[in-house]
Length: 487
Image (tube, rainbow, N blue to C red; front, top):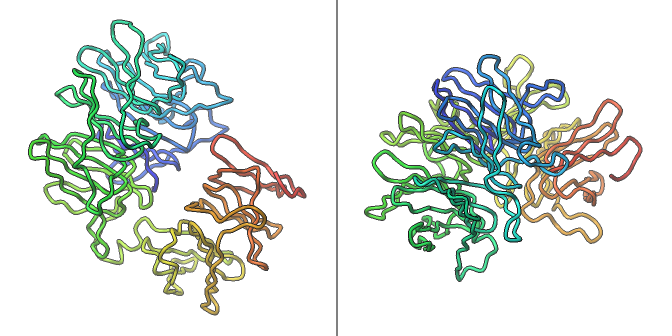
């Protein structure tokens, strides 16, 4: 359950997790997965999800690249909100970034086309456009929103903080002017409105910026620095019971005391199985018991309770080092039907037969500087490990390693920090690497790569029964028909 983007606890106590691999529900005993099914109109709209939200009535809302869905508890399925009602164009972008609720119990959604409110009534769904995509000549993607007690909306966009007055006056954009010339300094992906009417903003450039609504002024929080000296990118800010603030970042979890201005950091500690599994936190939720649930980029969900602050790689019960090593691990089937498992520390490979008995174990020696994210065992009993700048092979018969830098022929340069999402060896013997860099073809004989120029980003690949290759990109699908050489 890596790359979780949203977590919420509903009125019944169930925990819901929105990820880039579908929606999950946990009832304290079992985990249920909800996926998009093109033949079922009441399935979830997309598997790539950005947010999940439970409103004051107990209704669950899910948002992602396929639009907005409302969960039907009685039938255990979903109702889709029409894209046209949300002022989106299905041919361009259905993405919904964030979900919230205003003081009149209307659902708020931030989209690439502005900010909308949704009211559910017996006659159907009524949508009001609070903020259109274009005003003052600027395009606005809305990623976060707050509402003051006076009814004004404050929306965090990709280019400034937008004020939408309750009295109907035109919106106004406020920009933070800083010595930091990064274009991301005004890309406000998260926000938190405190009781003093100060908005805590997390820009994509890193750090925290305060905006005082009364004075209309920005001020950077200069003392918010991670233990390694990095100014962290903030993904979520939530209140803690005693008045402190939980701040989830890409550099760990922070507990900030606004009175003393002291920060307590919780980070991964190598060798400590009860520390945070992954410092790169994407989302956070505080449950009704005060437990903190964290969705991380690499190693799924972690949770802990402040009274006994030790982290658990959830939903696995930790009883020893071997349990933790293979929690949130990589798994797959080899060509000869064996199950293989690689622990999250990537130091050991285990093979199991069809009865579940362990047959072999291998100590792995991967390059420590590479971010390995996908593994595959081919028909020649060779393990392929895809890193951010290298493809590594381990011959399971001889134990020999080879490392291939991911540089394609021609003008294509090495992939810098390019994550591999999937590996496919098709029926024609072609070896595909799919990831943030697009699609690469690897020749096992020459050790060289060739980039498919038409594909700039990809997250999935499939070969159908007619030997056509399908590649899913960010907003489009590519198909390479059998016999063709390029898309």
